[in-house]
Image (tube, rainbow, N blue to C red):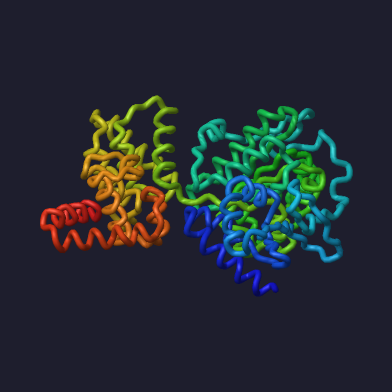
Length: 478
């Protein structure tokens, strides 16, 4: 029956994939594994309690319809939440999910007691202050501007931000412990880590919150070995209530430092202290780290940050300008957002360059100035044409708004603009028909195919229309 469960779930995935954004599909459905199918009940395995709750909150209707389509009116879905366990001597336990027809089975994280914390006290020297002070006050090393208020939420980061906010509201008491945030450079890992720390500190002033880079941690450990006070170093870290370690991948190959961090991690986790880690890759791709440490990274939640979409990029620029009290023409903001789509750091760098050029040369911020500056960022890189960019070009060409061409109106000129967007999206992007339809008025793949055929027919039979298409094509490829 397991093979049949795989077959049924595979059919479900095909339907789901055509009905949601690809990134949402990749985040929430690719990690799911079908376990069994019995009595019209499909049991699927999800990575965490949070995962289950998110599916129930955001995709329950889609799941119900899909399951009933595949299994009939009596079809039901059950969840199995399997938590990572690196020890083989622990029996499974049941988690009661508060819905009558749901169940979850799994292995809890195992915490092994260690003696390394004996003798810990509040008088232990703090690596972050001058030695010799009797009463210590930990400098959290948090940057105030890296707050949740300044962290723009979008589809690219919603999971990580939601989990981070939940952690800051109840540190050490959620299932996201540790919370590991990973992404490529410049996508906001450090900002989000600071935001969690700032919020936790505001919510719980009595808790000790500490942000530290992994390189700082390594340097401090080396100093403690040199000065023969490793116990003090370990005891200090075991007093922290919310420990944030940035770029944990730098522990790679450093066996002694990994060993001491392993014991610190265990003691913090065992005492319900919150651990937040950032990395440039997920745990399964980390090299040079001990398996026992990697297994602990999987106890909580690993959430990634993706490249921001167009709307998020525009919102980031608007927020930055608002915070700095600067006004900039909307067309310039949109131009920057359309053309710098690699990461947030480069996006903000492009903005700063334009502002600096305007200020130093006493020039007004215009679209022309923006184009000259942006060329320096993208001239050596083939710009990727996105569906959003195509829609913007089509809207500008026909003097329409994006909301208008994606509306349900059947006016001929608006339908034609929408069809042109679909046609060029199929021609210039690698997006699936379902994805194109989703971006262009939430249409299905059949509508996209019809649009492409319609445009091709008009190009062959209508000379004036062919001119429109050729002009638009040039603008899109500029």
